Image (cartoon, rainbow, N blue to C red; front, top):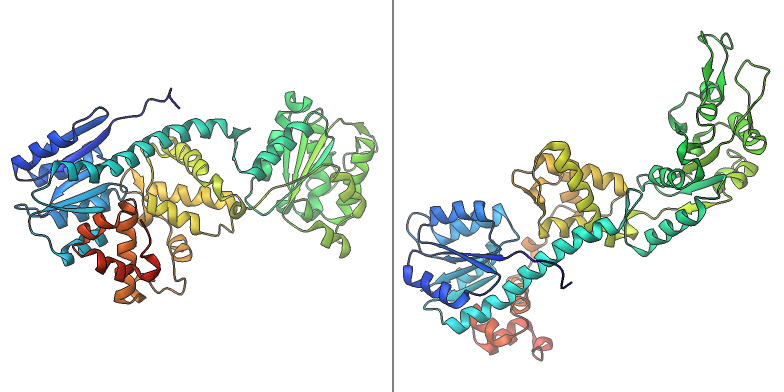
Length: 458
């Protein structure tokens, strides 16, 4: 940790009173903090877009462009910005409106230097931690990438370990798991780490092959073997001789072809369609499916002996919903790809968008996440993906109140007060005195809003 160089935190102060800006500079100047000030709110708005400050101190009453309007612009531009409002005329209604618009604190002028330093200490610490986390995530993303598969969850680490142990020795392997979990990447990893890596890896999507052409696709044919066979053709097993054949969606393989595949696995010999000659092959076979092969065996739609031959080694991939701790790594992995693909600078994802994505069930797993982030990267109007950039289905399904009603809109006034007070209390580190001061109420009123059960919180 000590070797990591953390970028400076930028504080932007926007106030039409020069004396206030001098106080801010005097109070907050310290190593690792860059302070930018302006008396012009329009210039301040330009600085927000150019400098990307982590913290903005914003005067509420300014000419031409008021603090509330500028607050709204800043939060719309980058919701991760911590905005602290400064005002000489405090009112509870105004404070509540500011917090609802996205401000994190509200200070009354004239601001005491000690108070300003104390209020911003937690925000500075938070900004430094986010800088440090971003750098660590970059290093962690590389450390947690295994053969182009990204993960650090215990389930994925087990998969990585199994691949390392199996790859040098396997002849057949079966990969199971829901659609979109990365079965082809695992098959590629098995090939790459095996002695067969110097030779071809041939891929057959069994769900995309016409039933009458399966045998030709896998084993080849000779000229005249059937209508349309105008020349000899090499099959995938012959093409991959010395390497690996990956049979994706093996559950869609017809029973007639299953028996022929079993014979090839047992004898390592293939016969082109229409040819009496036999050819020896040395091929490793990896099969994958999202179907329940045990159920198919019971229904007589999949051969039991072929299943046992393929499943000598079985790797089970977990759904994304069971490995949510991998989401931040996957965000970084995919955004890095889309930055290059679209030639568009995407810095990251806002905290509220990440919160929404973390609540989603991901029925399409990693492939669906990749598609969602690809779409959001194209739609993003800023250099950070926000909730508005996510597909409508994600916003609808992941948001509270999936019946379409907005949860916040259904709260009573007392519940709104309680939630707001709790948020401010958490922002200020559980300090009730500072919370009551920020809300402009007495400590007794704060206790009442929080409820008797909250009265012992410090």
